[in-house]
Image 1 (cartoon, rainbow, N blue to C red):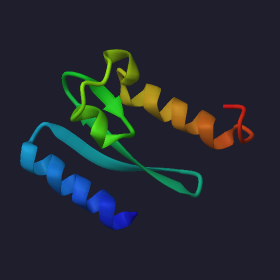
Image 2: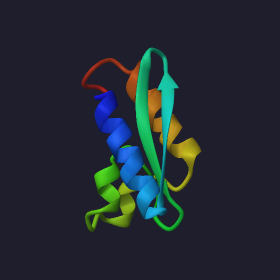
Image 3: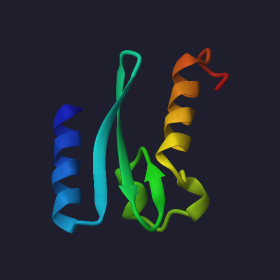
Image 4: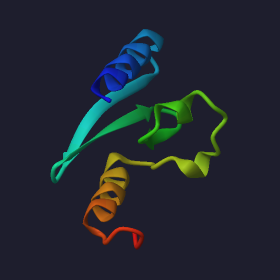
Length: 78
């Protein structure tokens, strides 16, 4: 998984459009990606495909809130 994250980071830096970073919540580490036009996502492929605008988070705070909720909610109830 770490190799895949590093490969995605390299691809993003070459294009110069998508900024990638890692966010640690509890014991889990999540890759997050930002595009100044579209917003934030946890999937780098969202920026390559024609993903609907409603699938992106407008701010990093929104994305972090969603990840925290997923991390603390009982499985299947988030």
